Length: 103
Image (cartoon, rainbow, N blue to C red):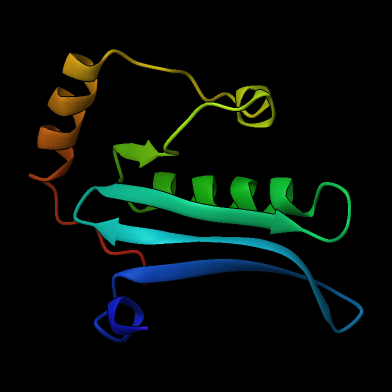
């Protein structure tokens, strides 16, 4: 809640007929978004949330989406593993940006 209060934690929610059926949340820091958790109660609802997250990140100039670990589901969405050195370089570059999730 504290991260949300200071504008760093964000969620994408998927609703159907008045009920939340899926979503995800994570932490936004400069040009990186760190995904924390996804869930679904209806098939593919988390895919909709991830698609929306990616479109927001692209529109706002983010350079890194950290998904923590590669799963078969995330691979179907285009996620790839990168070597640690590449990750650290991408993270360093992302920290030079001033992206805002909420604008």
